[in-house]
Length: 263
Image (cartoon, rainbow, N blue to C red):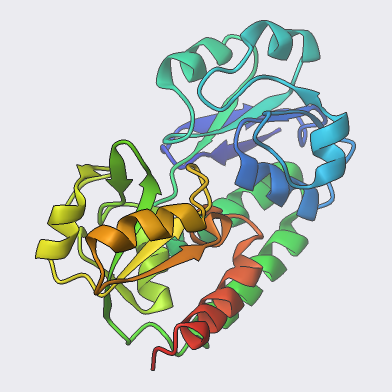
């Protein structure tokens, strides 16, 4: 028997390492695959697109905001792995009647590393998880981009336009990439206007590939209103996925700044 403390500070008690795991968060699903838990993970969401073989073959239990509690119950999980932001509190409460729910709360790189360590402990994959987080730390420590301080706005949605505040994981990643979030004084994911962006002397607008799938036509649309602001499409997974995807994020950030000719 052992105890695992989730990122809400709740103590969960287990007889053994879980053998039947349901994951409600795409980036954490990918992490579970990286840790080698192919047999243990039995259910994922319809947004858990990585790895592709899990997406195609694992039982899907709905979306992150509307999980199918009946399906999860039939899977008889030993643990359900969720996230404070990505999942709905009422559903997490209901799921606790089925199995222990381990909830992450990731708002910056340090939180992500702590989550990786804790998931490794929970699943009996300590060594691989610790090696992963040490490699991620090394790559981020080697980044040379974070002192650039380019005034930036990161858009995640359209109609209405929505951005990220200073208390988000994406804001933390923007800092490592060398961008200074012009909406860092806002909370979570505020609705904004392009006129607000212009008034803050924003130098660059980053259009994320998710959750809204921004395309070139949206660059053209915004450029017509803000002709003097640089606008670029970026890989949203690199800025918002907080599992092993972080292994690639540091290199992506360096390449992005090179592409933008930012020095």
